[in-house]
Length: 461
Image (tube, rainbow, N blue to C red):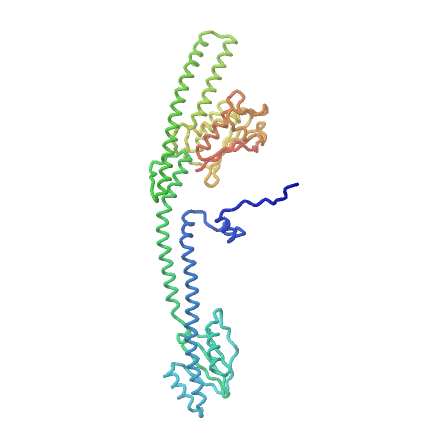
Protein backbone atom coordinates (compact mmCIF):
# COMPACT_ATOMS: atom_id res chain seq x y z
CA UNK A 1 0.00 0.00 0.00
CA UNK A 2 1.43 3.36 -0.96
CA UNK A 3 2.30 5.84 1.72
CA UNK A 4 -0.17 8.73 1.42
CA UNK A 5 1.08 10.64 4.44
CA UNK A 6 1.48 14.34 3.66
CA UNK A 7 4.98 15.46 4.68
CA UNK A 8 5.06 18.21 7.26
CA UNK A 9 6.85 21.41 6.29
CA UNK A 10 10.08 22.11 8.17
CA UNK A 11 9.50 24.02 11.39
CA UNK A 12 10.58 27.63 11.30
CA UNK A 13 12.31 29.35 14.13
CA UNK A 14 10.13 31.29 16.59
CA UNK A 15 11.51 34.67 15.49
CA UNK A 16 10.86 33.91 11.85
CA UNK A 17 7.36 32.70 12.65
CA UNK A 18 6.67 35.90 14.58
CA UNK A 19 7.98 38.09 11.74
CA UNK A 20 5.97 36.10 9.22
CA UNK A 21 2.84 36.60 11.32
CA UNK A 22 3.46 40.34 11.66
CA UNK A 23 4.53 40.90 8.07
CA UNK A 24 3.26 37.99 5.92
CA UNK A 25 3.99 39.80 2.64
CA UNK A 26 7.57 40.63 3.60
CA UNK A 27 7.20 44.35 2.91
CA UNK A 28 8.92 45.42 6.12
CA UNK A 29 12.12 43.56 5.20
CA UNK A 30 12.67 45.93 2.31
CA UNK A 31 12.32 49.01 4.55
CA UNK A 32 14.36 47.92 7.56
CA UNK A 33 17.92 49.30 7.67
CA UNK A 34 20.89 46.99 7.19
CA UNK A 35 23.41 48.76 9.42
CA UNK A 36 24.01 47.66 13.02
CA UNK A 37 23.78 51.22 14.38
CA UNK A 38 20.42 51.91 12.73
CA UNK A 39 19.00 48.54 13.78
CA UNK A 40 20.19 48.99 17.37
CA UNK A 41 18.69 52.46 17.42
CA UNK A 42 15.35 51.08 16.24
CA UNK A 43 15.46 48.37 18.92
CA UNK A 44 15.98 51.03 21.61
CA UNK A 45 13.74 53.78 20.26
CA UNK A 46 10.79 51.78 18.88
CA UNK A 47 9.52 50.47 22.27
CA UNK A 48 9.96 53.87 23.90
CA UNK A 49 8.19 55.63 21.06
CA UNK A 50 5.38 53.09 21.05
CA UNK A 51 4.98 53.43 24.82
CA UNK A 52 4.93 57.23 24.57
CA UNK A 53 2.31 57.13 21.83
CA UNK A 54 0.07 54.74 23.74
CA UNK A 55 0.47 56.66 27.00
CA UNK A 56 -0.19 59.98 25.27
CA UNK A 57 -3.26 58.63 23.51
CA UNK A 58 -4.73 57.10 26.65
CA UNK A 59 -3.92 60.09 28.85
CA UNK A 60 -5.07 62.74 26.40
CA UNK A 61 -8.19 60.83 25.49
CA UNK A 62 -9.21 60.30 29.11
CA UNK A 63 -7.99 63.72 30.25
CA UNK A 64 -9.65 65.58 27.38
CA UNK A 65 -12.88 63.66 27.69
CA UNK A 66 -13.13 63.94 31.48
CA UNK A 67 -12.09 67.58 31.77
CA UNK A 68 -14.12 68.67 28.76
CA UNK A 69 -17.21 66.89 29.99
CA UNK A 70 -16.85 68.49 33.43
CA UNK A 71 -16.34 71.97 32.01
CA UNK A 72 -19.20 71.51 29.57
CA UNK A 73 -21.38 70.41 32.46
CA UNK A 74 -20.58 73.64 34.35
CA UNK A 75 -21.11 75.78 31.25
CA UNK A 76 -24.46 74.11 30.62
CA UNK A 77 -25.49 74.84 34.20
CA UNK A 78 -24.49 78.48 33.76
CA UNK A 79 -26.41 78.67 30.50
CA UNK A 80 -29.44 77.07 32.15
CA UNK A 81 -29.31 79.76 34.86
CA UNK A 82 -29.01 82.44 32.17
CA UNK A 83 -32.10 81.19 30.37
CA UNK A 84 -34.05 80.97 33.67
CA UNK A 85 -33.22 84.60 34.45
CA UNK A 86 -33.96 85.57 30.83
CA UNK A 87 -37.45 84.11 31.05
CA UNK A 88 -38.21 86.40 34.02
CA UNK A 89 -37.55 89.60 32.05
CA UNK A 90 -40.80 91.37 31.21
CA UNK A 91 -39.52 94.50 29.50
CA UNK A 92 -37.08 94.54 26.58
CA UNK A 93 -35.47 97.65 28.10
CA UNK A 94 -34.04 95.38 30.80
CA UNK A 95 -32.02 93.33 28.29
CA UNK A 96 -28.95 95.58 28.54
CA UNK A 97 -28.90 95.45 32.33
CA UNK A 98 -29.39 91.70 32.17
CA UNK A 99 -26.41 91.31 29.80
CA UNK A 100 -24.17 93.45 32.05
CA UNK A 101 -25.14 91.45 35.13
CA UNK A 102 -24.37 88.11 33.46
CA UNK A 103 -21.06 89.42 32.13
CA UNK A 104 -19.94 90.65 35.59
CA UNK A 105 -21.01 87.60 37.58
CA UNK A 106 -20.68 84.66 35.18
CA UNK A 107 -18.12 86.08 32.68
CA UNK A 108 -20.38 85.24 29.77
CA UNK A 109 -20.94 87.73 26.97
CA UNK A 110 -24.70 87.82 26.34
CA UNK A 111 -26.45 89.27 23.33
CA UNK A 112 -30.21 89.19 22.70
CA UNK A 113 -31.39 89.42 19.10
CA UNK A 114 -35.18 89.82 18.91
CA UNK A 115 -36.80 88.32 15.83
CA UNK A 116 -33.67 86.38 14.72
CA UNK A 117 -33.47 82.69 13.81
CA UNK A 118 -30.69 80.13 14.34
CA UNK A 119 -28.16 79.86 11.46
CA UNK A 120 -27.38 76.56 9.66
CA UNK A 121 -25.35 73.95 11.48
CA UNK A 122 -21.54 74.41 11.49
CA UNK A 123 -19.16 71.52 10.68
CA UNK A 124 -17.46 70.68 14.02
CA UNK A 125 -14.20 69.67 12.30
CA UNK A 126 -11.99 66.59 12.80
CA UNK A 127 -12.35 66.58 16.59
CA UNK A 128 -16.07 67.02 17.39
CA UNK A 129 -15.83 65.92 21.04
CA UNK A 130 -16.23 69.49 22.40
CA UNK A 131 -19.14 70.25 20.09
CA UNK A 132 -20.95 67.00 20.80
CA UNK A 133 -20.38 67.26 24.57
CA UNK A 134 -21.72 70.83 24.73
CA UNK A 135 -24.76 69.96 22.64
CA UNK A 136 -25.51 66.96 24.85
CA UNK A 137 -25.06 68.83 28.14
CA UNK A 138 -27.02 71.90 26.98
CA UNK A 139 -29.79 69.73 25.55
CA UNK A 140 -30.21 67.93 28.88
CA UNK A 141 -30.91 71.25 30.67
CA UNK A 142 -32.52 73.51 28.08
CA UNK A 143 -35.56 72.30 26.21
CA UNK A 144 -35.14 74.63 23.24
CA UNK A 145 -33.35 74.58 19.87
CA UNK A 146 -29.57 74.95 20.38
CA UNK A 147 -26.82 75.99 17.99
CA UNK A 148 -23.11 75.58 18.91
CA UNK A 149 -20.01 76.80 17.03
CA UNK A 150 -16.60 75.59 18.34
CA UNK A 151 -14.44 76.27 15.27
CA UNK A 152 -15.04 79.84 14.09
CA UNK A 153 -13.42 81.70 16.99
CA UNK A 154 -10.02 80.84 18.39
CA UNK A 155 -10.65 81.97 21.99
CA UNK A 156 -14.43 81.68 22.25
CA UNK A 157 -17.22 79.16 21.87
CA UNK A 158 -20.44 80.53 20.38
CA UNK A 159 -23.70 79.16 21.86
CA UNK A 160 -27.11 80.31 20.58
CA UNK A 161 -30.55 79.33 21.86
CA UNK A 162 -33.76 79.90 19.98
CA UNK A 163 -36.55 81.60 21.97
CA UNK A 164 -40.02 82.62 20.94
CA UNK A 165 -38.99 86.26 20.81
CA UNK A 166 -35.61 85.77 19.08
CA UNK A 167 -32.13 84.34 19.73
CA UNK A 168 -30.08 84.47 22.93
CA UNK A 169 -26.38 84.38 22.10
CA UNK A 170 -23.67 83.51 24.66
CA UNK A 171 -19.89 83.69 24.08
CA UNK A 172 -17.90 81.46 26.44
CA UNK A 173 -14.15 81.63 26.82
CA UNK A 174 -12.77 78.42 25.33
CA UNK A 175 -10.79 77.77 28.53
CA UNK A 176 -14.12 77.55 30.39
CA UNK A 177 -15.50 74.71 28.25
CA UNK A 178 -12.46 72.65 27.16
CA UNK A 179 -9.07 71.48 28.43
CA UNK A 180 -6.35 73.87 27.23
CA UNK A 181 -3.28 72.61 29.12
CA UNK A 182 -2.70 69.44 27.07
CA UNK A 183 0.26 71.09 25.36
CA UNK A 184 2.18 70.85 28.63
CA UNK A 185 1.93 67.08 28.61
CA UNK A 186 2.77 66.90 24.89
CA UNK A 187 5.80 69.17 25.41
CA UNK A 188 6.97 67.00 28.30
CA UNK A 189 6.51 63.85 26.25
CA UNK A 190 8.39 65.23 23.23
CA UNK A 191 11.16 66.65 25.43
CA UNK A 192 11.76 63.39 27.27
CA UNK A 193 11.68 61.47 23.98
CA UNK A 194 14.35 63.74 22.50
CA UNK A 195 16.52 63.36 25.59
CA UNK A 196 16.16 59.57 25.48
CA UNK A 197 16.97 59.62 21.76
CA UNK A 198 20.12 61.69 22.35
CA UNK A 199 21.29 59.38 25.14
CA UNK A 200 20.59 56.30 23.01
CA UNK A 201 22.49 57.73 20.03
CA UNK A 202 25.54 58.63 22.13
CA UNK A 203 25.53 55.26 23.90
CA UNK A 204 25.03 53.20 20.74
CA UNK A 205 27.74 55.10 18.90
CA UNK A 206 30.21 54.05 21.54
CA UNK A 207 29.03 50.44 21.32
CA UNK A 208 28.86 50.18 17.54
CA UNK A 209 32.15 51.95 16.74
CA UNK A 210 34.36 49.04 17.98
CA UNK A 211 32.28 46.62 15.89
CA UNK A 212 32.74 48.83 12.84
CA UNK A 213 36.51 48.95 13.45
CA UNK A 214 36.53 45.16 13.78
CA UNK A 215 34.64 44.82 10.49
CA UNK A 216 37.08 47.19 8.71
CA UNK A 217 40.03 45.27 10.14
CA UNK A 218 38.55 41.95 8.99
CA UNK A 219 37.95 43.38 5.50
CA UNK A 220 41.51 44.72 5.35
CA UNK A 221 42.84 41.35 6.48
CA UNK A 222 40.75 39.61 3.80
CA UNK A 223 42.22 41.98 1.20
CA UNK A 224 45.73 41.21 2.43
CA UNK A 225 46.35 44.65 3.90
CA UNK A 226 48.13 45.38 7.16
CA UNK A 227 46.30 46.45 10.34
CA UNK A 228 49.07 48.10 12.40
CA UNK A 229 46.79 50.44 14.40
CA UNK A 230 44.01 47.98 15.18
CA UNK A 231 43.52 47.26 18.87
CA UNK A 232 40.69 45.42 20.63
CA UNK A 233 38.12 47.75 22.22
CA UNK A 234 34.47 47.89 23.17
CA UNK A 235 32.37 45.32 24.98
CA UNK A 236 33.83 42.03 26.22
CA UNK A 237 32.39 40.01 23.33
CA UNK A 238 33.75 42.46 20.76
CA UNK A 239 37.18 42.39 22.41
CA UNK A 240 37.18 38.60 22.29
CA UNK A 241 36.31 38.61 18.59
CA UNK A 242 39.01 41.21 17.87
CA UNK A 243 41.59 39.25 19.83
CA UNK A 244 40.63 36.09 17.94
CA UNK A 245 41.09 37.96 14.64
CA UNK A 246 44.56 39.16 15.68
CA UNK A 247 45.58 35.64 16.78
CA UNK A 248 44.30 34.21 13.49
CA UNK A 249 46.24 36.83 11.53
CA UNK A 250 49.45 36.08 13.43
CA UNK A 251 48.97 32.32 13.07
CA UNK A 252 48.42 32.60 9.32
CA UNK A 253 51.42 34.90 8.99
CA UNK A 254 53.60 32.34 10.78
CA UNK A 255 52.31 29.54 8.57
CA UNK A 256 53.03 31.59 5.44
CA UNK A 257 56.54 32.38 6.66
CA UNK A 258 57.20 28.73 7.46
CA UNK A 259 55.84 27.58 4.10
CA UNK A 260 57.86 30.23 2.27
CA UNK A 261 61.05 29.19 4.07
CA UNK A 262 60.38 25.53 3.32
CA UNK A 263 59.68 26.24 -0.34
CA UNK A 264 62.82 28.33 -0.60
CA UNK A 265 64.78 25.35 0.70
CA UNK A 266 63.02 22.98 -1.71
CA UNK A 267 63.73 25.35 -4.58
CA UNK A 268 67.39 25.50 -3.67
CA UNK A 269 67.69 21.73 -3.28
CA UNK A 270 66.01 20.99 -6.61
CA UNK A 271 67.62 23.72 -8.66
CA UNK A 272 71.14 22.74 -7.59
CA UNK A 273 71.11 19.37 -9.43
CA UNK A 274 69.34 21.01 -12.39
CA UNK A 275 72.16 23.52 -12.60
CA UNK A 276 74.71 20.66 -12.59
CA UNK A 277 72.73 18.95 -15.38
CA UNK A 278 72.85 22.14 -17.44
CA UNK A 279 76.61 22.50 -16.93
CA UNK A 280 77.26 18.88 -17.87
CA UNK A 281 75.08 19.19 -20.97
CA UNK A 282 76.93 22.38 -21.98
CA UNK A 283 80.22 20.43 -21.89
CA UNK A 284 78.90 17.54 -23.97
CA UNK A 285 78.74 19.45 -27.25
CA UNK A 286 75.86 19.79 -29.70
CA UNK A 287 73.77 16.95 -31.00
CA UNK A 288 70.02 16.28 -31.43
CA UNK A 289 69.98 14.06 -28.34
CA UNK A 290 71.83 16.65 -26.23
CA UNK A 291 69.47 19.41 -27.43
CA UNK A 292 66.45 17.34 -26.38
CA UNK A 293 67.98 16.82 -22.93
CA UNK A 294 68.62 20.56 -22.62
CA UNK A 295 64.99 21.26 -23.52
CA UNK A 296 63.84 18.74 -20.90
CA UNK A 297 65.97 20.43 -18.23
CA UNK A 298 64.60 23.85 -19.25
CA UNK A 299 61.04 22.53 -19.07
CA UNK A 300 61.72 20.97 -15.66
CA UNK A 301 63.10 24.29 -14.39
CA UNK A 302 60.12 26.22 -15.70
CA UNK A 303 57.64 23.72 -14.25
CA UNK A 304 59.44 23.91 -10.93
CA UNK A 305 59.10 27.70 -10.94
CA UNK A 306 55.37 27.44 -11.68
CA UNK A 307 54.82 24.89 -8.92
CA UNK A 308 56.67 27.03 -6.43
CA UNK A 309 54.78 30.17 -7.51
CA UNK A 310 51.47 28.38 -7.04
CA UNK A 311 52.43 26.94 -3.65
CA UNK A 312 54.03 30.18 -2.45
CA UNK A 313 50.93 32.24 -3.25
CA UNK A 314 51.53 35.95 -2.70
CA UNK A 315 54.50 35.38 -0.44
CA UNK A 316 53.72 38.02 2.18
CA UNK A 317 54.33 40.90 -0.25
CA UNK A 318 53.31 44.30 1.16
CA UNK A 319 50.53 46.22 -0.56
CA UNK A 320 51.20 49.63 -2.10
CA UNK A 321 49.49 52.20 -4.36
CA UNK A 322 50.09 51.87 -8.09
CA UNK A 323 49.11 53.82 -11.18
CA UNK A 324 47.11 51.13 -12.95
CA UNK A 325 47.54 52.70 -16.38
CA UNK A 326 51.35 52.67 -16.17
CA UNK A 327 51.21 49.21 -14.59
CA UNK A 328 49.18 47.74 -17.46
CA UNK A 329 51.24 49.60 -20.06
CA UNK A 330 54.37 47.87 -18.75
CA UNK A 331 52.66 44.48 -19.12
CA UNK A 332 51.50 45.41 -22.63
CA UNK A 333 55.02 46.46 -23.69
CA UNK A 334 56.53 43.21 -22.39
CA UNK A 335 53.93 41.19 -24.29
CA UNK A 336 54.43 43.26 -27.45
CA UNK A 337 58.18 42.54 -27.37
CA UNK A 338 57.33 38.89 -28.01
CA UNK A 339 55.51 39.81 -31.20
CA UNK A 340 51.98 39.94 -29.78
CA UNK A 341 49.42 42.37 -31.21
CA UNK A 342 48.06 43.74 -27.93
CA UNK A 343 46.19 47.00 -27.30
CA UNK A 344 45.44 48.85 -24.05
CA UNK A 345 42.17 50.70 -23.40
CA UNK A 346 41.79 52.89 -20.27
CA UNK A 347 38.99 55.24 -19.20
CA UNK A 348 41.43 57.40 -17.27
CA UNK A 349 44.00 57.30 -14.47
CA UNK A 350 43.21 54.77 -11.74
CA UNK A 351 45.03 54.49 -8.43
CA UNK A 352 44.83 51.08 -6.79
CA UNK A 353 46.31 49.54 -3.63
CA UNK A 354 47.60 46.06 -4.50
CA UNK A 355 50.56 43.71 -4.20
CA UNK A 356 52.33 44.79 -7.40
CA UNK A 357 54.40 41.65 -8.05
CA UNK A 358 51.49 39.31 -7.38
CA UNK A 359 49.05 41.28 -9.53
CA UNK A 360 51.62 41.49 -12.33
CA UNK A 361 52.00 37.71 -12.22
CA UNK A 362 48.19 37.38 -12.35
CA UNK A 363 47.65 39.64 -15.37
CA UNK A 364 50.76 38.34 -17.16
CA UNK A 365 49.48 34.77 -16.86
CA UNK A 366 46.17 35.83 -18.42
CA UNK A 367 47.90 37.76 -21.20
CA UNK A 368 50.25 34.87 -21.97
CA UNK A 369 47.32 32.48 -21.99
CA UNK A 370 45.55 34.76 -24.50
CA UNK A 371 48.59 35.34 -26.73
CA UNK A 372 49.24 31.60 -26.94
CA UNK A 373 45.91 31.01 -28.69
CA UNK A 374 44.99 34.26 -30.45
CA UNK A 375 46.25 36.78 -32.97
CA UNK A 376 44.84 39.94 -31.37
CA UNK A 377 44.60 40.70 -27.66
CA UNK A 378 43.02 43.70 -25.95
CA UNK A 379 43.75 44.76 -22.36
CA UNK A 380 41.31 47.21 -20.69
CA UNK A 381 40.46 48.62 -17.25
CA UNK A 382 37.38 50.46 -15.98
CA UNK A 383 35.96 51.66 -12.67
CA UNK A 384 32.44 50.58 -11.68
CA UNK A 385 31.49 52.12 -8.34
CA UNK A 386 33.87 50.69 -5.74
CA UNK A 387 35.24 47.99 -8.08
CA UNK A 388 37.95 48.03 -10.75
CA UNK A 389 37.48 45.59 -13.62
CA UNK A 390 40.45 44.52 -15.76
CA UNK A 391 39.61 42.56 -18.91
CA UNK A 392 41.83 40.51 -21.23
CA UNK A 393 40.06 39.77 -24.54
CA UNK A 394 41.31 37.66 -27.41
CA UNK A 395 40.07 36.41 -30.78
CA UNK A 396 41.12 32.79 -30.24
CA UNK A 397 39.00 29.63 -30.25
CA UNK A 398 37.61 30.33 -26.77
CA UNK A 399 36.40 27.84 -24.15
CA UNK A 400 32.98 26.18 -24.02
CA UNK A 401 30.80 27.74 -21.26
CA UNK A 402 30.49 24.43 -19.42
CA UNK A 403 34.31 24.17 -19.16
CA UNK A 404 35.12 27.73 -18.08
CA UNK A 405 35.08 26.97 -14.36
CA UNK A 406 37.13 23.80 -14.86
CA UNK A 407 39.88 25.90 -16.45
CA UNK A 408 40.76 27.27 -12.98
CA UNK A 409 41.40 23.83 -11.50
CA UNK A 410 45.11 23.22 -10.80
CA UNK A 411 46.82 20.84 -13.22
CA UNK A 412 43.62 20.57 -15.26
CA UNK A 413 43.95 20.55 -19.03
CA UNK A 414 41.14 21.38 -21.42
CA UNK A 415 40.41 19.62 -24.67
CA UNK A 416 42.79 20.16 -27.61
CA UNK A 417 40.60 22.99 -29.02
CA UNK A 418 42.03 25.32 -26.43
CA UNK A 419 44.67 24.27 -23.94
CA UNK A 420 45.52 27.14 -21.57
CA UNK A 421 49.24 26.25 -21.67
CA UNK A 422 50.14 23.41 -23.99
CA UNK A 423 53.71 23.07 -22.77
CA UNK A 424 53.00 24.23 -19.23
CA UNK A 425 51.74 22.76 -15.99
CA UNK A 426 48.12 23.89 -16.11
CA UNK A 427 48.59 26.35 -13.22
CA UNK A 428 48.41 29.70 -15.03
CA UNK A 429 44.72 30.42 -14.40
CA UNK A 430 44.83 28.83 -10.94
CA UNK A 431 47.65 31.17 -9.90
CA UNK A 432 45.80 34.15 -11.42
CA UNK A 433 42.58 33.41 -9.51
CA UNK A 434 44.51 32.81 -6.28
CA UNK A 435 46.10 36.26 -6.61
CA UNK A 436 42.80 37.96 -7.44
CA UNK A 437 41.01 36.37 -4.49
CA UNK A 438 43.94 37.26 -2.25
CA UNK A 439 43.16 40.90 -3.12
CA UNK A 440 39.48 40.46 -2.20
CA UNK A 441 38.37 40.07 -5.81
CA UNK A 442 37.88 37.27 -8.32
CA UNK A 443 38.34 36.24 -11.94
CA UNK A 444 35.57 35.19 -14.33
CA UNK A 445 35.81 33.70 -17.81
CA UNK A 446 33.28 34.95 -20.36
CA UNK A 447 32.74 35.12 -24.09
CA UNK A 448 34.77 37.94 -25.60
CA UNK A 449 33.40 40.60 -27.98
CA UNK A 450 36.42 39.75 -30.15
CA UNK A 451 35.06 36.24 -30.60
CA UNK A 452 37.36 34.37 -28.26
CA UNK A 453 37.76 34.32 -24.48
CA UNK A 454 37.43 37.17 -22.00
CA UNK A 455 39.16 37.00 -18.63
CA UNK A 456 37.58 39.54 -16.27
CA UNK A 457 39.38 40.52 -13.05
CA UNK A 458 37.33 42.28 -10.35
CA UNK A 459 39.26 44.09 -7.62
CA UNK A 460 37.94 46.35 -4.82
CA UNK A 461 39.23 49.91 -4.74
